[in-house]
Length: 440
Ligand code: AMP
Image (cartoon, rainbow, N blue to C red; front, side, top):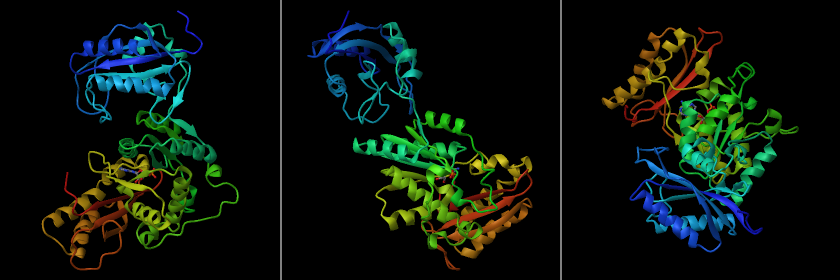
């Protein structure tokens, strides 16, 4: 059947996994057919598919698709779908991945791609989902030929990155930012997952920042794996990856630096002069380019977090900082991109950092409150491991990490750094733990 010129052929996804699933979908189709501006042209068979998504298992879905011709613009068509979902008994807006009486999605709208606050067409994960692809194919759609919104979008130019974020900001999206140096692992993934929970658009940045490496550090050798990173970002639902070259990040003439104060003194700041100035400068530039509503950072880099917290407050960046807990291997080693460089012996020895911190935490839980006694307990564990050359072991005030005087402490965060030199190149590892943190 040909469509009048003012109509567009669209495909709607149909789903239900609550109540009388078939009746819910059939009622929605009947109402759809009565809606002015919509003609239902064809409906696929309804088949059962297992629930796909996060969270606890749910009853299987009944799924299908409908081909409709409509004179409604995309957002009006979406509004009709939402109204029908409500009519079927859904309370909207609803938390993600709840069982639902009715799910009506705009899958395809003519040949258009749409990237609006409420509507993304084609749905970015449409191509991975049998419960969408199979009904579409049954209706004769060549799913291989459908225009795709490739996600994540990979941006290398700072101007493109800023323009993309600013478009999202203007259309009212909540944008979440996760800055990284790449070689992504489960620790980074946890930040992305945390960010995904509360944003409409998720941005990850991958940039091995030369400003934060000293002349004798491992800038050239830092692990890089853009392809693997993009795969992980895609799995985590990242919308855009900003992966600039140093020249894009710091164009010719770039000479401004963020000077950092007390939070950057001692520990990493002492061992790596200029490191936190480089971190603060790149993070400030990322904040300025992206202007996110929030950004996620790991407690793994506790001093970095303290520096960024201070800088964000001092410079008045209007965003929320979200701290994410450290993700560890089963034996306690904190995940780090540099762990791949540990020799097998050093890898075994590396658990000493967490063991030392745990010993201090256990002593604190047992009532020890003297700063130096707590440090001595952790130091004794470290001393047994010959392969670890300790750079520092400190107990600082939790949060801003300012020094704690000797004597009684009510808590605090213990921080440690050590080198392991048994592999092809020396590896420096850091870790930290809040003494009051409950043991897992
Ligand atoms: P990096 O790529 O090392 O600059 O880290 C990027 C972000 O991931 C920082 O906010 C880190 O604190 C965080 N991160 C790194 N390792 C871990 C981990 N094991 N657990 C949680 N977050 C981490």
